[in-house]
Structures are given as structure tokens and as C-alpha cells.
Length: 249
Image 1 (cartoon, rainbow, N blue to C red):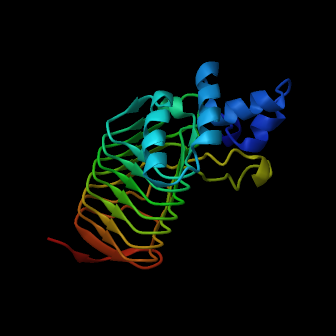
Image 2 (cartoon, rainbow, N blue to C red; image 1 turned 120 degrees about the horizontal axis):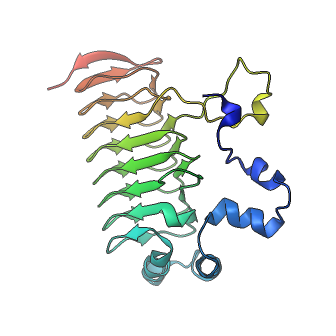
């Protein structure tokens, strides 16, 4: 599909839309269709509770953010300074922990948004965000610090998977080098297909998985590897680009 015809959720494009004032643009970027009373509640929580330390801060945020979400299970915890964009399309399962300075962004006009299963851990400074795509993270997934996950198509991570620090997962996000439109003016949402990471996988630190390069169940991807094509289930893959070097039990 031509990049120019896709919904454009880039910050610069929203800010440039005619007739949209600063408050309207800010509300569209952060909250989408969230009702005004919930927007004001979110602003109040961000101002008063976002940076509160200690057990009291964890307790108050766990209750204060709950009304903003599409769904929230019991005992969900938010660390300090979380950023929740379009929270009305974010679903979080029971006992999930969002560490300090994380971004959860379900932005999009036609997408379902972001779903986190039960007992998920999102490490500090990790960004999980949609650009009119969907992200589904299964139960007991552990995502380390400083990771980035972006979807303008569909991304899924299977139950029990562990993802090392500084890992980058990309579903969509490609630019059209054949187009006459400058890259900075394209939406950057071209995609070759959904990205799926199977159940019970281990991705080492600084792994990069590119658009449509899915990984089967029970795989291990060596630290620093760049996955550019699908990896079969129960494989050990390493290198740049990643190659299967061993079949696992």
C-alpha cells in the first residue's frame, strides 16, 4: 500500500493539521478519543503522582491510572514517571509491572492498540508504542531495560519469552525509497507483514528484529544479532544477519 495513503500519526503531521490549536493537538497525540473528564484526571495524576517515590507512590499510581485504561487486572504496578498515550486502548493483565520511565503508546485511528498479559514485566526506560498498529504481549513475558518495540502493523510476543536489554523490535516502520516524497515527509509505516515472537524464546541483549522477520517458539537469539528473515521454531540463531547454527531440543 502506498505510504502516502496511510493514516499519518507522526507528531509533526498532527501539529500541522489546519484548524487544530495547541491544546487540541496535544490532546490528540496523548489521549485520542478519551473523554475530557478522563483527560483532566490523567493530567492531574501526571502532575501530582507521576514522580512520587516509595511504596506510597506505587500504591497511588496503581489505583489512579486504572480508570484511564481499557482494561486493568488487579495488582498492576507503575514505576515513577510512566507515559501512557491513548490509554483508552491499553489493556494490562493482573500483576504486571511497568518500571520507571516507561512509555506505553497505543496511538492510532483504526487500530485496537496495546495488550499486555498477566505477570508481564516491562523494564525501565522501555518504549512500547503503536503507529496505528497493534501489539500483544503474552503472559509472563519479561522485557529488560531500554528496549524499543514499534508496530504500524501487528506484533505479538508469546508467553514466557525473555527479551534482553536494548533490544529493538520493528513491525512496519519502513520508508519507500521508490517514492518521490522526501523520507521526512513520508509516514514511515510501510510494512512487509506482521512480526511474531514465539513462546518461551530468549532474545539476548541488543538484538534487532526487523519487519516481518518472525521468530518461532523456543528460539534463542544471540546477543547483538540482527534478524532479517524468519527463524524456525527451536533454533539457535546468531550474527548479522542472524543465521541458524543449531536446532534446540
